[in-house]
Image 1 (cartoon, rainbow, N blue to C red):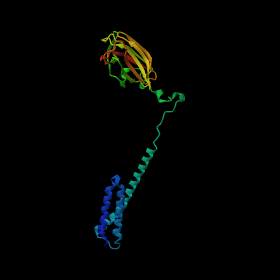
Image 2: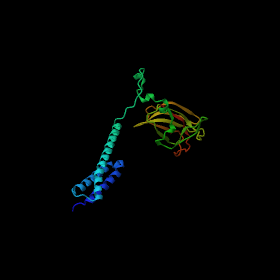
Image 3: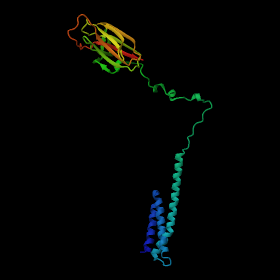
Length: 276
């Protein structure tokens, strides 16, 4: 069944009107071009199919308007698309080839020696972090041994605010281990029995060891009684990975009937300082 010529011409006119509306939306200009081509084809078909047999007045007017208007719509859409493509290409070229920033010319007096060779040379001393050269052993968490206390003690009539307190054990020893990581060189401390120690007749061996694979190597060892304070100064601990502090029972003729802790924590290492 042949397509109605009136319908064809009016469809072409409607298509042109749609194309004109769509044309004003930038993202649909390609669609306007396609609709314009379809409208032109409909107008040409309406006239060609009835060549020699004129359409009715309104239909003929519609067909003529379609044939005249469609090329204009097609041309405008094509120009708009061409311009949009050119703008896109220019934007792509600019983004891929940015204009280099102008740099100030180097003064003839400037030489390569004036330019810092590394960022470390230009950084200010305040921005550089340095490791502490000394620290208290109380800042380390014990990694083994018996229970200890830390706090303020009196030793030889003098108060110390930083101290490690060990609990002496009858017939045995009490120890505490610290990981030094081999990072420290010397160890200082004031060693003795707290001034409120009640068993004044008992003496104890205070010792410091380097814990190694098959033994504990003595670094310091001395018997200390009440009201005796030993100053431990610059004890070498270089390359010591694990430091052990020990308080050991001194064997006497009067051995206790049973062995136990005194629960006094009176064995004191006051001001225990590590230095690089």
